[in-house]
Image (cartoon, rainbow, N blue to C red; front, side, top):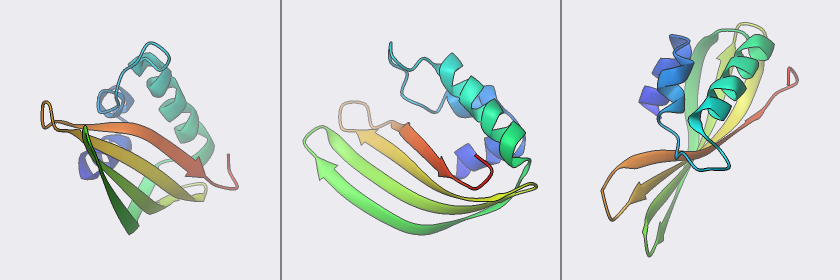
Length: 104
């Protein structure tokens, strides 16, 4: 999550998108577009704070659900970031990000 928000703060949307699990339904290019759209609506990331974390262990790995309070230059937001750690390769991937804001 720290690397993700560091990339968002630097406006490195390509770098942030590469942290997502790429599927045929959601290629990284789709995430780049979504992150750029969020930036246009919310402004530049000023700060973030993880307000809650839920950990779920499943057969194939561990899913971490982070609730994040963010402040952007135009609007504040509450975000949910879902990260999955696979037992097969030990890598962390972002599965989904949901952004709730008046600016969206």
